[in-house]
Image 1: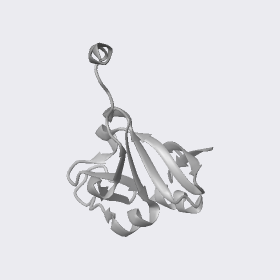
Image 2 (image 1 turned 45 degrees about the vertical axis):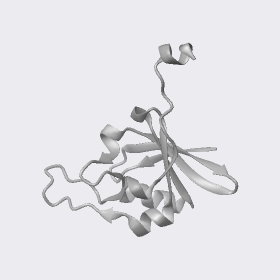
Image 3 (image 1 turned 30 degrees about the vertical axis):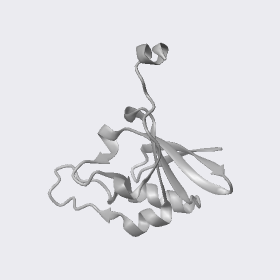
Image 4 (image 1 turned 90 degrees about the horizontal axis):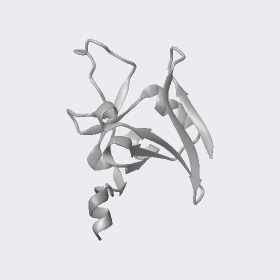
Amino acid sequence: MRQVTVVGPEGRTILRGKIVVEDGVRIWETKVRESRHLFRALDAWTLSETILRQLQDLEVERIRLIVADRDGEIYEVSVADFLKQAELLDQSTWSNRTEEQYALPRKHWELKRGSTHRPLQLALAF
């Protein structure tokens, strides 16, 4: 397992994650927050050009998002599929434009694990 910090063009940390190898496949996994990383207009997970470029440089084959504010839901997609299917966001009307951002609707991601959270009282009752 290798810790990876994606650094933006101006040298600040964009996202932390780690590369894990499962069955010979290099997977970049990172924790995200739906409230911050989901582009609601398309119901899509977004990644910046910098993140995608660095993942390619590290020869990562799959992307795994662990959604912290959704009780650890896990979404996964191959980097190849992300690059083929994601669309470039039009930021021309945004007041705070960023570097190029690509969005892949949630329906194209594989939901690996759904929410398993149960209130403590219910869990103890069974």
